[in-house]
Image (cartoon, rainbow, N blue to C red):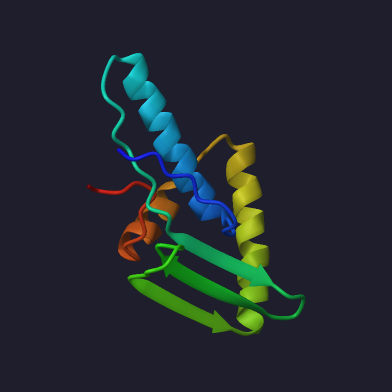
Length: 117
């Protein structure tokens, strides 16, 4: 595993979750005397709210070259952002890191936190 520190790139919540998940898995492996091998995918999902509208994007990985580049804009992004914030706060209050529905949707969209390699 190479030691790469990327600076100056924006971070989305999903990308941060990916990095933290890889870190937690690797710490667990180290504590068990195993070699750390988990790697973050650097995928990004973002709902950027601009008041009455916004932009949504998916980038796989966030840092070029990308395999997937998708974006859309409109008033629906504002509604989606508000709904996601309510969902996120509710799952945090309940002590859930990832609800089964969230896992299901991310798998269907082929978005993963950890690299399969």
